[in-house]
Amino acid sequence: MKIKLNKLKGLIAQNDMTQRDIASLINVAPNTLSRKMNGKTPFTLPEAKIIADFFGITIDELFFYHEVPNREHSA
Image (cartoon, rainbow, N blue to C red; front, side, top):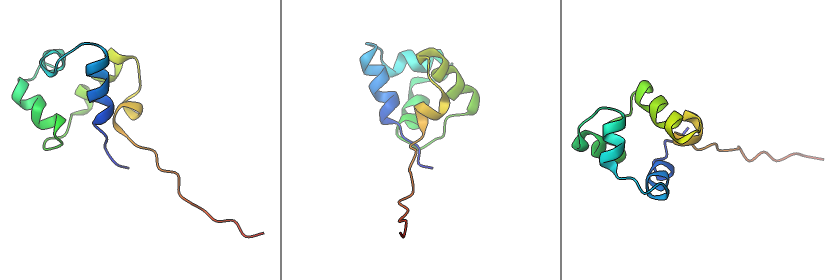
């Protein structure tokens, strides 16, 4: 599975929040969150849970793409 951060960035914008607000929510420094948002450092499971719960979605919905394999069926 691929990690996606655009969903989180979109939720931050839609809710008139800043990355500093999310950093405060998960109790990390803003520069630490910046590294996480840029994919340089992973979010911990507790951080992911806090953020997902805050936005009312699952961790899976927040961070992962679901790719459906292309399967050809022979008839």
